[in-house]
Amino acid sequence: MTVTATSVGQPDQLEPQTTPVSRRARLLRLLPAAAAALAGVLLYASFPPRTVWWLALPAFAVFGWVLRGRTWKAALGLGYLFGLGFLLPLLVWTGVEVGPGPWLALVAIEAVFIALVGVGVAKVSALPAWPVWAAALWTAGEAARARVPFNGFPWGKIAFGQADGVFLPLAALGGTPVLGFAVVLCGFGLHETVRLFLDRRRTGEVRRSAAAVALLSLAVPVGAALASRTLVSDKAEDGTATVAVIQGNVPRLGLDFNSQRRAVLDYHARETERLAAEVKAGRKPQPDFVLWPENSSDIDPFAYADAAAVIDKAAKAVGVPISVGGVVERGGRLYNEQILWDPEKGPTQTYDKRQIQPFGEYLPLRSLIGAINSQWTSMVRQDFSRGTKPGVFTMDDTKVGLVTCYEAAFDWAVRSEVTDGAQLISVPSNNATFDRSEMTYQQLAMSRVRAVEHSRTVTVPVTSGVSAIIMPDGRITQKTGMFVADNLVQKVPLRSSETPATRLGILPEIALVLAAAGGLGWAVAAGVRARRGAGAQAQV
Image (spheres, rainbow, N blue to C red):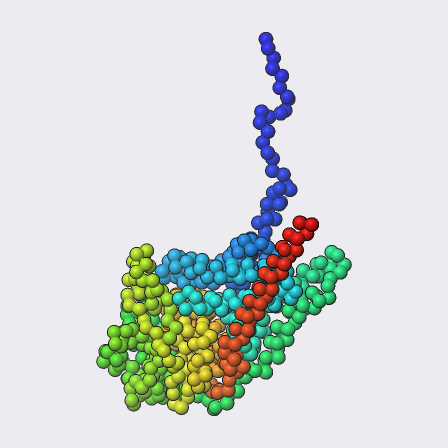
């Protein structure tokens, strides 16, 4: 008998065992990615309808931490994760009625801009005063997003999350670019301050220049914001006007609300006539003019006499001019138009929306998209055409600047009305297609920022809510609920002076973009010199 000896307790095959150390190492490698995504979610949480604007600071502090010293490939991925964490929940309303496809596609494209900013931030993180260059790079990324593709999509600019914050007065100093820059600088400065504090505890020393930059990155934005409060005022310069905002509501939610276009028109006419009755009974003051929302008459009153008669009857009942949001076909072209309707003269002035919404009011790349999904081409059967001139209506001797819905997100569209003489801004909107999502609150916050930026009263008439009246200091003094018929009447201040932001226009943004380019160029040059120096030493 042959006995084969084997080692007792030894397996036939040795299997590699995962030690706690290697598991911990893998988890640590995943930590920056998880932190980047969670920081993006934190940034989203700082936006309306929440009022925790200050969450933007720790969000950018964490973003700075995960990017510092990274390679460009790692920074690209981490920046993209930060963008997804921020934009996926922020823009979920874009898929409320059309499904997740367009929402996910939009976020995937917009997050690329943030990923590229992440590469730039990682590159400049080794420079002196890096929070300044990094914050300027974020502003440059926002400037790019506001212009391309398809004329841009500025939704999610950091400034639009700061309507309740201490930094808001900076909007009057340099507009949304300066306001956003200050918030991001403060966030990166917070990271640098914490980093240097930990370094001091570990090594017992820290460079004074680095410490000074970190502290100034925190102190200067806050100090500038406090100093800019002198630019914010709700005092009347040109007297006052009593304005009425009409919210007629819609017969149903969703994209098919306009299948009952006549009902929407009738609702707004009825609410105006109800206001006229309240004025006659002495329960509300007589308005000087009335503002209806976008799409309050999707039946062209120039083509259909019954629609014109409904509007005319409402104007005569209230006895003052009405700004009516209509869909008008002229010369074979479709326009999203505001119409000034006088109770005696009928329609006297018009304003055609200039910044029309891609995939909502016109379809870019129609043939290509139609081949992919015919549903899109059926939803946007005919493209709207763009207006070419600012819209400032003279309503009872008041200059009212019109900024239609989507246009409120674009700096140039609002500023042009003020430089054209507007003493008050109206943002007629239609949010019925977005149900009860956060979209309406995000857009309302934009109007609050615009009020401070240009020191103007801003009215927001919306078909289904939230309609509001906003003072030049950004305070909401009246607002409606959602999906109710209501009206708001208030005496508001009229102003004609221009803030530094209005006068400077695009110049602060250009300056910050140039600063971003300068910082990035400096970082690239420093990297090239370092590689050459290392190569020379290796040859010796």
